[in-house]
Amino acid sequence: MRRLVPFVIALFVTLSAGSAHAGVYNISYAGTDARSGWANFDATGSGTFTLDNSGNLTSFSFTLIETSDAPSTDTFTYGLADITNFSATLSGGILSSLSFLTDQQSAQEGWATGFSVADLLAGGANTYNADGPTDLTVGTLTATSVEVPEPASLVLLGMGLAGLGAIRRRRAS
Image 1 (cartoon, helix red, strand yellow):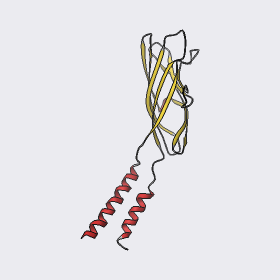
Image 2 (cartoon, rainbow, N blue to C red):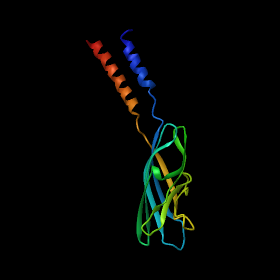
Image 3 (cartoon, helix red, strand yellow):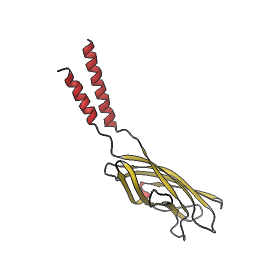
Image 4 (tube, rainbow, N blue to C red):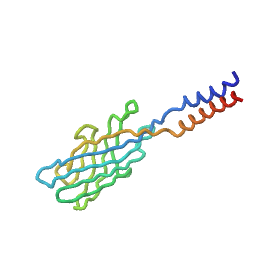
């Protein structure tokens, strides 16, 4: 019985280690021109954001590329400081809703462009210019979670396996 005590302790510690509730998400955007009679615009973007255990935004990085038949290409990079009105809802650990707004950044042609997400549905995201009459592009933002193991869980698993190895070695001798 005394020989089983380290095994039971190692097993308990390993099994009681919970997974991280914080989440890392990859996001991507594809949008097409929302206006008529202007230069045709297309926009694509990709990036990541991180939520802490309480669902608060802790990091954000997104690069948006807008192209037009003018011809011109503009690249905008948005960070955590550029985000306003961020809201995310997790349901059972799955991102069920997302909305946010970025500050506007200057483009080559002199106008400014921002990025807005109302929801994760088709047409729920857009690029905009506050001076313009309509959105520049309208499209869909997709968000997928990135599985990131919690370091403490990995350490505890390793300790449990080391304990099992020590018990087996002790029995063999």
